[in-house]
Length: 127
Image 1 (spheres, rainbow, N blue to C red):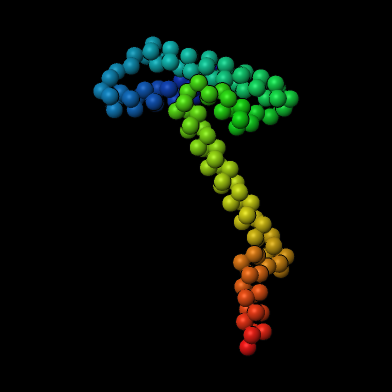
Image 2 (tube, helix red, strand yellow; image 1 turned 90 degrees about the vertical axis):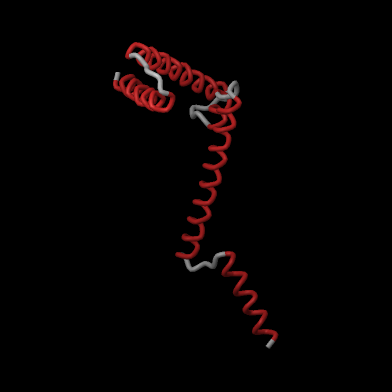
């Protein structure tokens, strides 16, 4: 019930934005209808995502399941793919930072520091 109310509130806010932007009016009944349709569609999406994961013999919904769900909307699929790649890239960066921090904390050298040390040793051997 709270979730349904949250959807209704969000739809109302979005309708207000459209009203200001496009100079149109939404009746309370139309906002309620949009909210109801949105809520029902979200329930369908949730069931579909569960089924996609179950079909793949998984218990966790993945980004591939979400992409499969969005396959009929090229714009949405493109957006989801882009965001998924951004998240993957950010996750890789975070892992790299954690690796550097943990290796520095252990007294190990980062790859850049190792390269500098090798160059430094070569320079001192030449002299």
